[in-house]
Image 1 (tube, helix red, strand yellow):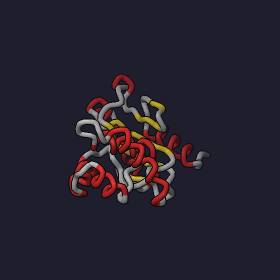
Image 2 (cartoon, rainbow, N blue to C red; image 1 turned 90 degrees about the horizontal axis):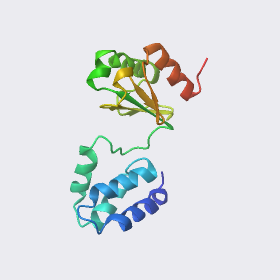
Image 3 (cartoon, rainbow, N blue to C red; image 1 turned 135 degrees about the vertical axis):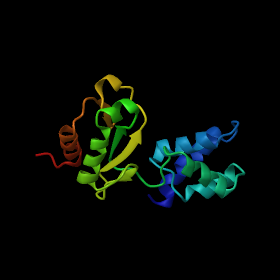
Image 4 (cartoon, rainbow, N blue to C red; image 1 turned 180 degrees about the vertical axis):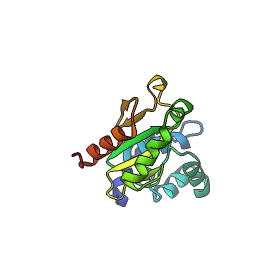
Length: 158
């Protein structure tokens, strides 16, 4: 993303939220919603506008796992890591991600197709283990089924 691509999103977020009490989280959330991530080049712009140090803004971005500083993949996969899903094999789903995509949690596949993030409850405990792919919830996901799902979103379906 070039300098000019993210700037309008940052300007809009600052305009909407700068006058609210404690606006930093709101600004960061708005920027990420608009661009998919917090561009590192935006940190000094946000800091200057909100009269904060770059370190303060960077600290918030790096503290919260929901903020990312690199563009996400074209597809977003969330694997539930809460107790109910862990008890019935969510770790095996993480293993499928490592095998198929070569990435860890919070990673994006080398081809930019898939970003994988852990979440700590998708509210689908009765149908564990659960994953969410591009906003669609799936329950009772076996490692085999999950592998096929990953292949399908990457365009490698048999």
